[in-house]
Length: 111
Length: 157
Image (cartoon, rainbow over all chains, first blue to last red; front, side, top):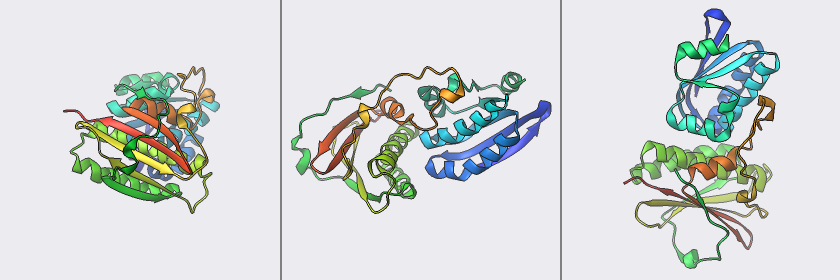
């Protein structure tokens, strides 16, 4: 599991997750995600390269997102695969953290 | 993917059925890495398509981590087994057994979440809903000294 961040125009922080968000993957990204959530106000979580998402992985998205929301920030999820999106929908997370497949609309949703 | 949940069934004659492939895990979350490799091997063996493998991984992660965290209370030193058992053509069936206190995950509420804010979202606790959604069939049985969860998946033709 790998994680990289890019600061984009308009104060958007893009976090790219790459790999399997299973229990082991979640353990790898948790600390970094929390650090990012501590400073980001507009967080775009890029899920394009996430090949698996389990409930422990969901936790690694929900907790940082909660921290960003808690200080008045916004979080969007970008470009999950069909199966990953199905996990997001089943858990109801997509009703709180909107899922976008178009980068421009994802960024617009953060403004 | 449809979900069929059967009520607890009377003990079938399958007690004598030999597993096709069996994995024994310790009660530590780290042991789940062994589960991935085992599922990958089963996926290769049965030529399972990626989406079905995803569903299998999701359900087995859920079921096994539940046993480790709740059944065994996070205490190391216990064991559980995951095995494939003979099934009708076009189905792949996994059986998970532990020696933990009675715990039927299917008793957990399965209501769709009504979320108003992210604070309503339980950080964990999505597991049962995920299991029901991604498994083909789930059966729970209470054993004399443990629990058995049988999870089936339909393989696309």
